[in-house]
Image 1 (cartoon, rainbow, N blue to C red):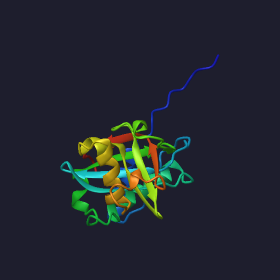
Image 2: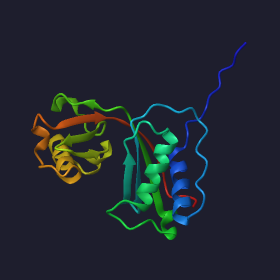
Image 3: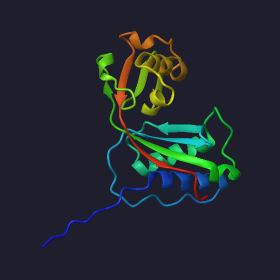
Length: 185
């Protein structure tokens, strides 16, 4: 007789928080969750403090283990986001941590393929690349054209209408999101 085992999903947001706390304090990074690695197309860590963006960075390297991708993204979001100062130790308890694990991107064939709130986008053209996570559209109340245009101009450094150019590649992806509210540091 065999029995099935049920394993809890890894706490990727809790792991990211532990990595961030260690990086900010200059201590040893925690051991990653012990889980079977699953395919992914990258990971992003988004940090909010009192409801405001405080950092968001990631990696699009599918060759990294999921744990390594989350660790790299967490450290980058806390210490290397060029839009913000490094996270200070006294901010750790106020951070909200969100981890987004990306699916393999697929080419957008038409605007009808894009579902706001479900799909994130990668824009590539002219040797440049930009990315918006799916939550950017809903968090900022963007319609499809504004979502694409802002990614082109704000993230890829392209003209806002570059997404209309057939030479510009638009890729769609989904995310699995893990959230943690402010907590132990």
